[in-house]
Each structure stands twice: as C-alpha cells, then as structure tokens.
Image (tube, rainbow over all chains, first blue to last red):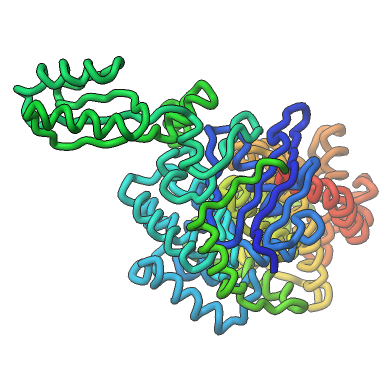
Amino acid sequence: MTSVAIEACHLVKDFGEVRAVDDVSFSVPRGTVLGMLGPNGAGKTTTVRMMTTLTTPTSGRASVAGHDVTTEPDAVRRSMGLTGQAATVDELLTGRENLRLIGDLYGLPPARVRSRAAEMLERFSLSDAGDRVVKKYSGGMRRRLDLAASLIAAPPVLFLDEPTTGLDPRSRVELWEVLRGLVEEGKTLLLTTQYLEEADHLADDIVVIDHGRIIAQGTPLQLKDQSGRASIVVTVSRADDLLEAERLIRAEVAEVHLDVADRQFTAPAEGLSAITRIAEVFQGAGIELDDIGLKRPSLDDVFLHLTGHRAEDPTTDAEELSA
Amino acid sequence: MSSIPTPTTDATTRAADAQAHAEQPLSTDSGSSFLRQVRALIRRNLTHTKRQPEMLTDVTIQPVMFVVLFAYVFGGSINIPGGSYREWLLPGIMAQTMAFSSFIVAIGLNNDLDKGIIDRFRSLPIRRAGVLIARSVSSIIHSSIGVVVMSLTGLVVGWRIHEGVPKALLGYALLLLFGFAMIWIGIYVGSSLGSVEAVNGVMFSTMFPITFLANTFAPTQGMPSVIRHIAEWNPLSSLVQAMRENWGNTGALPPSAAWPLQHAVPVSIAWSLLIAVVMAPLAIRAFNRRTSQ
C-alpha cells in the first residue's frame, strides 16, 4: 500500500496540432482532496479523462490506487468512480434502476447490488425519489444520484469533473457537505472546478491549470500568500466617526480605501502589528469599532495575479448553461 | 516532479488515518460476468422502450400504415402477375422496416454518446464490446416486435404463408440476418455524426429512398431500364424476393429479371454478410475514435 492514491507524471495530450495538456504532474496523498482549478478549456477535463482511462495520454504516466492507467486500465476502473461534467445518469430509468445498472456493470453480486442501491439512496436522501424516473429529478438530485452511482462499488478514489457546475448555491453547499463526508471516510478525491471558492472550501492541495499547463500548486494558504498582501479591514460602528477615523488611519498607513456605505476602511497590512497599532489609536480616540481584522487575498485574487484574467468568466458560465 | 504540493499537517494525519482503515472496493466477480454486463445493458435499453412506447411507432404504427396505404390505396393500380398484391406487399414492408432498424441503433447510440452515458460505461470495469453487443441485441428485439406486428397485420389483410414451416422460418431468418447487417450501419452512422438531428436527417434522406428503389412496393418490370437495374441489384430486393419465394407470395419471376433476383436466397445471404464484413470494422473504428477523444 502506497500512501499516494493518485499520481500524474509529465502527462501530455495532443489532439492533432493542439496540445490540450502539457507536462502535468501532481500527486494526491490517500485520504486528501486535490482541487484542479482553471477556466473552461484549460485541460482539466482532458486530464481527468486520462486519469480515468477514457483517453490515452500522448506521453507521460499516471496511476490510480497504484495501478497504471495505460497498462492496467481494468484495475484502475475497479478502484475509482467518475462523476462527469454533466450528470451522466440515465433519464429514463429510476434512481434505483440507475444504481443497480452501475452495480451490475461493476460485477457486484446481485444481492449486494440491491442492498447497496438502497443504502446509497438512503445516504444521499433519495429514498423517496428512488422509484421515480430521473427525468423528474432536480439538478441537485441528479448530481447526488450521479455521485451515488460512482460510489456503489465503494471505490477508494473518486474523480469529480466540475461536480457543482450549474447547481444553485444551496445545492452546491449541500454537495460540498457530502464530499467532505466522503473525505472523512478516507476517500481520495480529485475534483476540477472553475469556482475558486469551491477549491478553497474542499481542497487540501490545489493545482492551478491554464492553457494545459500547471501554473501554480500548493495549499490554498500557500497560494494566497504567494499572491501578495493581506489587508486590514476596519468597520466603524457609527457613521459620525467616519471623518475622524479616516484622519487617524491615514496618519498610520499611506494607502486607505474608504467604503462609506459599509463604514469600512481597507488598507494594506504591513504585518500583524499594524492591526494592534490601529486598534489602539481608535481606542485612544474613543471611536467604537464593529470589527477589525486581517483579510487574506481570495483565490480569485490569486488567479488574477497568476494568469492576468479571472477564473470565473460570466460569459463562459452562460455558454455552459445554454449548451 | 520537483514541485509536488506539500500536504498540510491536517491532510497528513487524515492520510495516515485513511490508510489505517481505508475502504477497499467491494469484491467483484470476474470471469463469467460478461454475459451479466450485456444482460444489464439490454435490460436498460428495453426499459427505455417501455418508458417511451412511442419509440416503437417505427415498427408498429408506421408499417401498419404502410400496409394499409399500399394495400388499399395504391394496391388497386399495381398489378402482380400470378398473385395478390397484398400478399406480395407484406415481405416488402417487413424488409423496409428491418432496414430502418439501423435508425434505431444509430439514434440510441448517438444519444448515449452525446449524453456521456457511454463514457460512464467506459469508466467501469466492463468489456467495452458489451455496450455495442447490447445495443445490437436490443435493436434485434425491437425489430422482432415489428416483425410480429406486421405478420399479424398481414394475416388480417389476407397475407398467408403458403409453404411449409422450414421455408417459412428460412424467410424470417433471412430477414433477421439482414437486420444484423443493418446494425453495423447504425453503429457507424451513430458514432460518426454529431447529433441525433444529424442522424435523423442523414438516415431519412438515404435509407428512405433506398427502401423504395427496390421491389418492395412495386414490381421492377415496370421501371425504366436504368432504375430497374439499380433496383434489382439493391440488396433489399434479393431479400424481399427470397422472402416472397419462401413464403409463396409471388408468381414466377420474369426471365428478364437480373441475376441477383434469380438466385435470391444465396444472394441475400451474401449481401447481408458482405455488408456486415465491410461495415463492422468501419463501425468499430468510428466508435473507438469517437470515444477516445
């Protein structure tokens, strides 16, 4: 048993003249989550397709649960579950029939297929809907069923390709809960996402991928540190104090941004001591504060810093929905 | 591999934890499971038909309408020397319906490819040929329903089999063999084209005329010579002629009929095998190319 559940070594995939994935390497320790972050067309899906034996790498090597994806594809398929970009469940079957079909195809003993299907429906709160045709399911229910299908044979590794794309915020948060539960059980997850917030929430490690190349990797914290400065955010309690507060804070730091509506100052933080100093100044002047704290740059800032463009491009999102 | 991310402490503990009691994949039976996989996939395809009975219109309502149209509307003006037009017509419509079974395969497969269902299947530890085999068997079952419906309709409008049981069965066997060949065309078209609409368009504009440019609905003797030549060499014509002969639904063939019609049974078998042998590798290649993107 190795402690590495998923490994990619210099993976390359060419489609004709186009290099979709260019020298991608990463490794995911057992029981952890790797978030693969990047915009549409960055090569995330192609990477997942190579890792899940759906397409063969042009060069490079990859393994899942210790099995090589090109030389032992069947062992890889036995060790992993895949939840694709669109929820790939069968619309004309019921939830239960979908799960049984996948269980049968995995080759589980028939009695086990029945009990596992019931277990999975229960676990993903689909018991009531289990005998309804999937066509009548909501987007969130489909995703949960898709995930249940991937888990029916209890594979130790899961690949999730944009698991929450197209979901409403509530369903998204619900799915995050489910995914966190899986990690607690010891599953290893590789998930791709365009949502920085999602990678930040779920991933232990993140690789940022753009134009087929990894442009940064590390923990969410490391990535945030890498892209520069944190800011101090101060919220003043009374609007009457704003003028006085602004005068005081400008005396302490050079670059201040004031948001009048929110009674909020934002200033670059030069170390933690700046917070204490500003807090003392305000206390001395008798200005009450609602809040004072340090704000780290979000992954959104990081992505912008690394690539020069935003990860969540509203136009690409709209295209995806209409597709 | 210089820059593998360093896991956080939290993650490291969890990794160790997970290693201690990692859930192993549930044991799967290997070996004889191929049949079970194919059976599960066939069951799934048939459930589709059950949930969407309108999928059966192409092998039920449509051919019955054709029987009624041709038997009662056009039939009066088509003369069959030495036989009744209604009896003569039935094998033609059955063969046309079987040719259309390539439609069913193409549309079903294209739909599954399009929706990512095939990818899901391919990510499972199954023999990938099972997906195509299941698709083919489902299509044969689908067409067989049509054959039964048409036989019953035929009996109602006065069609009868005049030869013995072995010849009757040979007629049906030739029909199914042709259906098998059509499946490969379906897999080829379904894998090659981008959307169900495209499949529909291409199949309709090719298969439809092909099934009319034959001896299916009208005798070839009355056609202009070039057309007649094409019609008589149409694989469908030898099949229809072979069925008519085996079921006693036709009079003597005119001596001017082309060679394939003079040897309808062996030629029909040869056509079906030839189509299958040529189309199967093309179909498998198209399917593999489509799925390995």
